[in-house]
Length: 343
Image 1 (cartoon, rainbow, N blue to C red):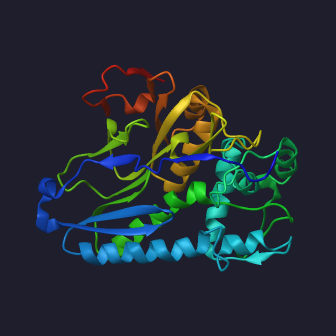
Image 2: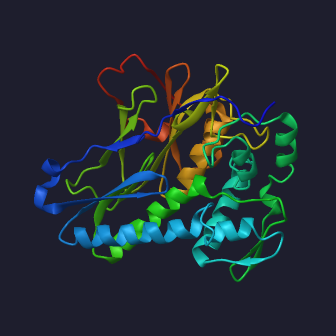
């Protein structure tokens, strides 16, 4: 197959979660809002209280700083230097080291359904530079030989080593981590309550100013508007779906969520999956792993892990919700035909 293909591209870059909050809810004088384009998405930061503007400035600064550390394309980033190291040890920042440790732990937890070394496969499919193509089977087989988090050696003192051919991409955990760290920066600036929305990743900070739970809407893959809402406390809510980035070739749609075992876009019964938990990077990684594993896998993992909840929309138009969210999740008008199951 020729390398350059005539491909029709359909990129659906949608903000997947909506927080039902506005100035009229909390009083215009108390709400401060800012925007920043980073991490390939438009990020909105909302802060409440007198120190709101200072908090937003602090969050933006932290987002920029961490993006430079964790980017796979910036030649000065920690991740780029690791990937270009040709098997030599690389000293990185404490934040990068910490996130790599977390990525490995999530990979182990999910038995490799989330895999921080899948970058060579993602590149083959063109999802890094938008030069989309369907790789030859032998290319995928060769690249898979380098995909294994056991290839990552943490040497201590913020030093990391990977063999030549193994490459990291922390994108599937970075947004959640950056959301958490930005919230800490806002808190240090004097903000006690706020929202950081990084595309399909929402960080809820502190208490809702109305002294009630936050209401977060989950957007439907087909029309991009909220079809259900969930009551949530401080923490992270992350939604993943294959419709976020995909391309069509010869009538077949290929998406960016790669199954690390096969090297091909994951095939499961899930249309979109939303994870609710305190830890942003965990929510990020689990949303990918659950999509790869499917709804039955999600229910089994939840039985052994009590630190997350999920909302899954299946391809059969069924909404599967973990038991702890019963009474906290509600379908919105126009979507009453969706069947709800609790597991």
